[in-house]
Length: 378
Image (cartoon, rainbow, N blue to C red; front, side, top):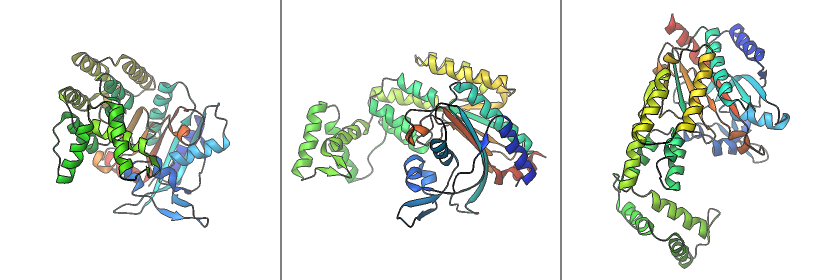
């Protein structure tokens, strides 16, 4: 663990560049995290119930609590930046579930690429202050993935499904296999269900919806889990579109698999992505221009682009991440766990109650991994 003196120096570093220290409550409303965090975090929450019956949890991260504090106290029209230090709580199979972190968040900056570069550079400086320099920086960009998706002429339901799974690894791979039409059903029940959905696929949408609503009416079903018969029917039609692939969707799946496999040093990434777009006749010019501008901003801040890796398949599957993400590892390598995780989450403040989306980016440093990284670098 870093010393208190080192932690104070890093907090001072954050304050010098305008990140005001905050200490959000440890107890947080559980429903927010159950709705907005990924499955990995949800299953590791420490849950309890308040005296009034409200479900609570020990904060599993700082980002959402800092956003909530910002919404309660700040002027949304003014860019604001915060820093923090303290424990987060996630159940672990080994070791204590109390994890010390330090980090920073930035809200409201319209110069997104400059803000992205500033936060990446700030996290690298913080690691230097801790004596655990960055040995491996990896970046990703959901915006590029969305641009590739948009250029493949896939049904809207498939585009939405694949975007939702970006960063999910195995789940995304499984979805691409279904898109390819190579996944067989695994049981008699699956066969019957898929047979029904296949009957709907390609049917006139209004007729298919009327048929499903009629079947639900015959069964005496008007609502399920708050959904109306019409909404249930629409969900059936979406599932029908997702049951299997065609020759057209197989070609799209092959392009997506090729894209997700791209992995290169950042100084070569623009050329690699441009070549990929030409090969597959995709127009990703706007997303690529944003990506290039961000890389230029990172270079201006003194970071070596040749020492940073771009992984097209690198995503962080939380509902609120929207674009640039990064992670940093120390000399101990990736098997020792990331030292820093960060990224852009422009949707989050809106999901938490802001009237509109607010540009936001932040990062957290895992303090319990600093000592190991420092020892490995010596």
